[in-house]
Image (cartoon, rainbow, N blue to C red; front, side, top):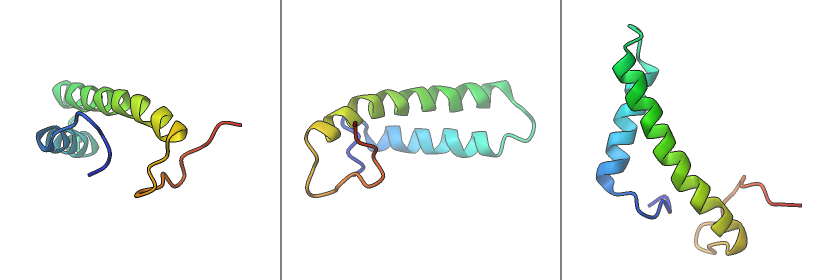
Length: 71
């Protein structure tokens, strides 16, 4: 759906739950921060792989608006 190759629906749901929990972590629970940080690292790794590929070979079906280009 988002072009995150290798990400399953289960991954997306887990990341979403971790991010939502992190946003609402009013009690400063260290376990919640750890899950949120882990989810962020996983998504960042996928984006680090995806962005250079889209810059080199844009997908005409879904142009990456706002994606900075080199130069």
